[in-house]
Image (tube, rainbow, N blue to C red):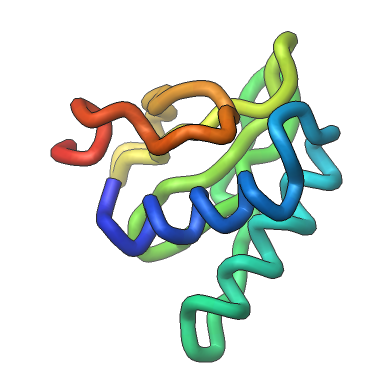
Length: 99
């Protein structure tokens, strides 16, 4: 995850709170992207068994619904989904930042 992705997710978490619905999380992510990235947009990157993955087409980092709420993932160039951590009002996990 890039530092820009981390900043976007930190702002989105502060806008949506610790336990948003997936739709609220998408709204917060969209708002944070448009505030922090000139002409920024979010895209549907793929899907999991629980629903769509919405996020950055460039970095592949996005959010997806899961049984516990919302999770942060990265979609690789091969289309595989790599979990990065749960939606929490904290910084992303350190090990995820260096992938």
